[in-house]
Image (cartoon, rainbow, N blue to C red):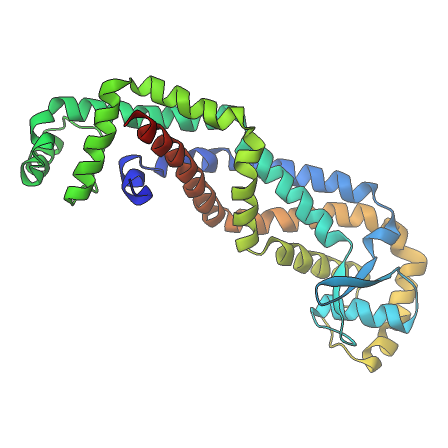
Length: 314
């Protein structure tokens, strides 16, 4: 059976809404974790730069009041290469890792996954009731009569939500019959129990992790972290957004040197106060898109388990 057909039978809209409901908990946890991580770091690590070429780290620059470091810092802030190297911060992978772990924990929460499975169980129950009520029509694939009947029932207020709202083809009716036929051999509770065992026995994290990492990669999580770090450092050091050039490095060297001499020791506290808020705000702005992608993938995995069960029962 095609997943697109099953997805129509088991609407994923409720899954997405469930995680949207709890999203403030996710962003609060991300913010608190990042605050603790940044505040605990040595100021030199906060300003350490990584020079990459062909995707590999070639050099590591510790913060020093010299032209080489200043030029590389300006390149990082301006998001430009310098001397053939792409510049990144020590903080980028740290932030990325924290966000990934928090997202994985959020979507791996057993209570939420069980709530999702309860939604699937409700759908299967509705399918079973629908099929039993109109078995003859479905058995004969009388699509026109099925649609007319559903329209009458909806207008009369007899159905709360159309399980087959997207029922527009004989393929869908066939899929509906296939699921209903299996439910005739085993209760929908048995099907859910089977799906739950498949998901939880293999380890929730291993089930969820690749889905979450894929979704975060698609929105460019590493780029989000890098941009936020660059913006925060530019503001705190007081150098703004500048062009990358040798003259600029000479001009701004005294500014960077003064910061490294007098103010750098306050950087962990200042970054911990500013950067987590910036990161969480950006992720919140993108969350609807990310959540939609993740919940659709999760639903796809549930449907895969349902497909396995269907095939086993044939």
